[in-house]
Length: 124
Image: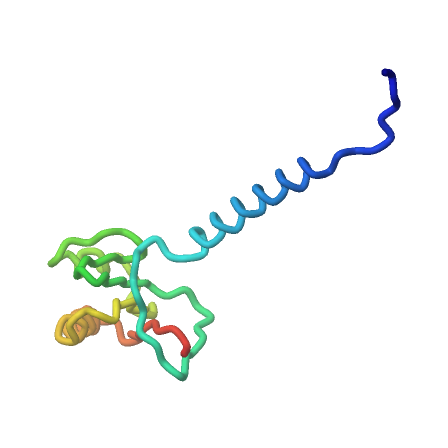
């Protein structure tokens, strides 16, 4: 009954590696996407920015965030008051928000003294 084991069974090793690969791939997709669920609009031409802008996000429900921090409805001026006015502001607006709310948001940002306001979109 004594026999020498001269081979390694690699099937359990392959199974474990495939499970680890699935775990890594699923967590990588959660990390790469933003924390705030915003369904961006699409555009044919997209510009690339090299500097780090102030990110103002508006969700489909109308919730407002500045650099991933929630902001009250009328608290945008207080949230942006500590930022330098030369900074670029990037607005990430969900594509289902009302245009009037988006225009009011951009007007409020510009009235605070920020001149470089842009909209984030995804390429078609």
